[in-house]
Image (cartoon, rainbow, N blue to C red; front, side, top):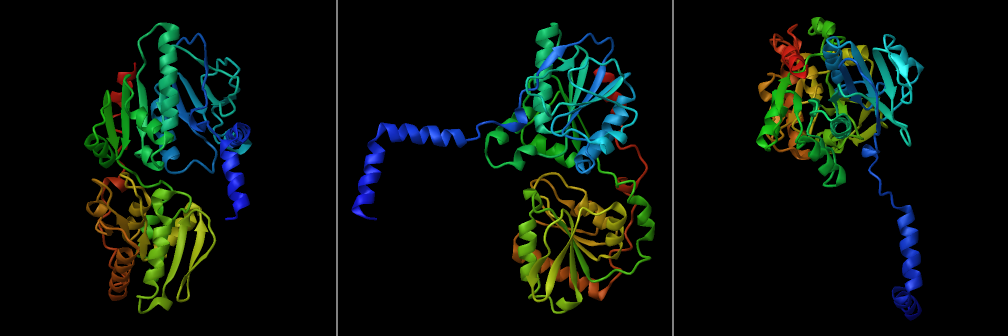
Length: 419
């Protein structure tokens, strides 16, 4: 560094004007807002009967899968017991095609005090706006920020109408602080589990419920339910074994979702391609989220199928022999179960109290997930398949996952507690 540059730096550090200019310039580019907690302001409305409200980020078709789909199904079961039903959207406004799929609902603008008994209100654009909230409005939260909103609305109800706090239903499908690095969102997500008002937790799996117990969280009431196979996939189970399995590996590939450990899977494949003797007989497909095809070496390219139609996904499951689906969280996730029931030998991972090995004979759950460990297990699965291509096809499918039993047997008890 030249003497002149050093002198300029020393001058800049001593100059009040330059320091002020720096602070003003840098601060103007800082985003100091937490988008998830954008104010959600309410106004009074004379509500004659209780109303059940589902607070959900979106009902747009591109968002309604997995967690949101399960939450909407749960809401539909509960809402039939209430004359007044409302879905409030926090993140996205639906398009005409999305609204058409909810034809029994009236799409209502937030500034309108509608008397419609079945409403959808998009409140994603809420600057300087309010949404009508009555003293008997009840809320089902579906993510940490919708829970944060619901808890604040209940506090507003309590103060505005001078009533006891209403019970809130918190539909918990994962440990959401883990979606973030230690951060503002981490502590805010965590805070919603520590709400001191009456809160009913509904957990997606007893495994997840146990994780919350182990970490000291308590709730006013709590229930859990187990996963059910998608109704559109279930008919294809009858074809398991009719279609010959190929030397094809199916990975659950979601590069944008950190907890699905996509990069780790790809690194494992880069190790595997040089260890597998018959490597050129194998192919690898990635399903879940679109991404560029990836050359992992030795002539193997991971072909991205993105978010497939259920029919295409089912056909891919029927012909694939090995599945890899990771979830770095206490929730088991659905893809490993789908793969296992379709006769794939599945590799997934342990996390805390989660061990899916006990859920299905076709699932291997690794305690130590590294590229080398995953590649080694892939080699084992490939050898097993080569020795016996029907190995995963003769499993008992009578578990609750594929049964016709009610998924939410506790719903009547929960509803009685809300009235």
